[in-house]
Image 1 (cartoon, one colour):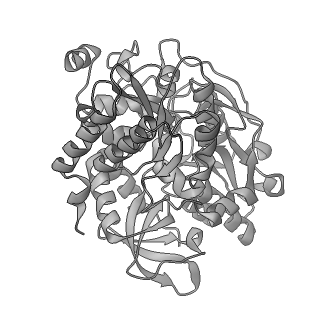
Image 2 (spheres, helix red, strand yellow; image 1 turned 90 degrees about the horizontal axis):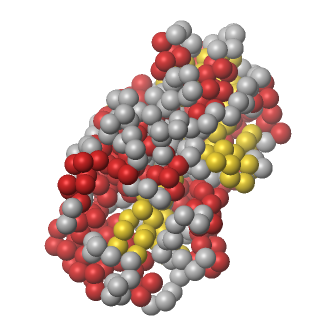
Image 3 (cartoon, rainbow over the protein chains, first blue to last red; image 1 turned 90 degrees about the vertical axis):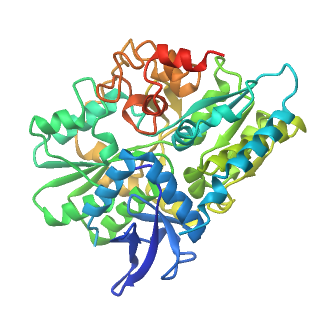
Length: 90
Length: 375
């Protein structure tokens, strides 16, 4: 729950501008990007995701570092990723 | 994905270590608190204490939101989940946290409908699909997760959903830091500020620590070199007699935070007069409740919540660990009666809790820790 997971924005959902499809470690899921409405991310940009919401924009370098941190955490990250895979907010 | 090595270069770590050592005044002991459980994790995973001179002690703070939920709130949530037609939804992190009569998992095993969700938006979806049921979201977390709960309530309001509510347990980090600063038990020299919380609140809320308490604060990233760099920045301030708020993690944390997120929290929630923290007791203005305008989403008003206060188990010294007064291995039950498999205290339940971080990196028993730290 506390973990910030990096995801790459793929596309926005056409009828719901607050929702975007992102790629997280090869898993594609829909997240809410409403908290970035002041400066929305574009497809190809990276965001840090907390419990289904993009909280900040990050660059690819930071995304790689965040991913390595998460992989080092082990079980907690596996659980979080599994939970994300189950998540269907759209 | 590339360039990760720049955060983990051993040569750079040793160079920083030498610079930090050079800043230590002879004969002075330094205590620096890392507020966030994520930082605690990096420190133990990478053995960062081995890079620091013995004069510097890292003290673990209260920044694990799962760890600070008191037993009474777990009991309240389980009572609420047992009400007719209720589906309780919760982050997985909360499922094993013990109340006085067991955890969410135990209640679920007894037949209570408690479901794990990844996001509060998943709870909203369950509500849409189950119009005959009353869906309650167990909201926990610092300012990192509070915006998600706020946005979800705004969404529920926009959709006119009548069967969704929030059992709000969001806590705020600043009053906890202030409580630690005011505690007579502990003298600290500076703070590593939390990373992700600061993406929301920014750096300004820490200014009172520098201004009123004369302690430096450096908001830090989560990579090993981030933490060493931040410790160096703290030590440099101390050596130069400065106390300021600095942002080492500016590649993620904007100085002013996330204004949209703060607005969403302010719209839907307000500060409680006081809230109980596990181990720390009651702290003024340290938690959020649902605002009156959103009362129809406030589970505390929709259901009768027992609100019974439950004392922490006597053997458990989570409070001292959360305040940084005790190291995890100094707790009487660490690694013996209290392990991640059979946790007594919350610090052992959450993977970001200080005790779990110690335990998971091989420091399994007090005896072994003593051996490991013996000079």
